[in-house]
Length: 274
Image (cartoon, rainbow, N blue to C red; front, side, top):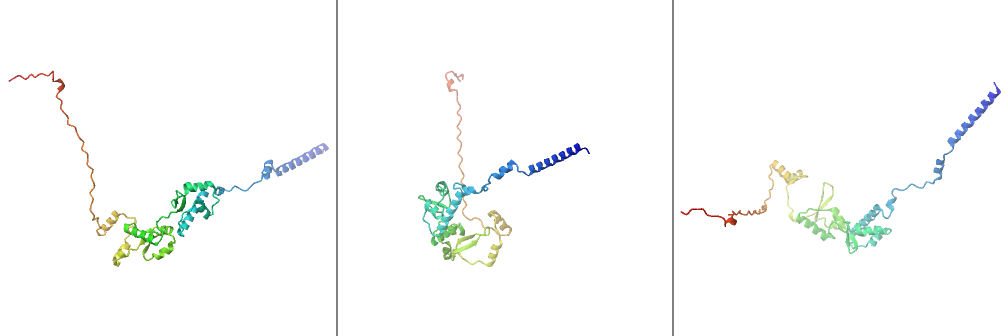
């Protein structure tokens, strides 16, 4: 083979080898954008719940209000019924770090508009659902409900309203009736009127328990009793007649016949004398 051809072949092979090494170095070397990313220090990811810890956040404000109402309810149930100022409330609930915006919101909007809080001369006290303070007031309320036909009172409302509720309820155990409502399993307290007790035969008791009238109106109950051959009790009270409004008669003016009085000076009488 010609020596010139051999030299050209060796030069070509050498050049091809060098180009291959350059390509490998370029693929391994990091790009400028990757170097920038490595140099940039990544801080901790932002906390999506960070706004909850801010003094002006709505969730923080309502959290403060919830703790206040819960504390006012607990102290009322313990027998402490004297009102507290806003500073005393925040102190007892360990929320003195509340900012001025939160305090202003509590004083101007949250506490005055809360159905569980009552304002007394710039101070605040818990507002129970029932006006009961002791055994006598509770028994009086139950007796009034029984006389007026209002039914019973929820035990939950009594527990929320009456200080030292468990102790008082044990004292009234013989003067009340406890009924569990089937719809939500809540306990209803009724006044036990011993003056209306009378024996009922077991046959009538069984009929009463087997007859279900849930969700039925008076008309449906009357129809059911008629189908069973039982006459329903009718209202025997005095019937009040509906008051009828007197219709005002429209006054019609009588039409007056005019005799052409304005033509009297030109009219002539043509009647011939008899």
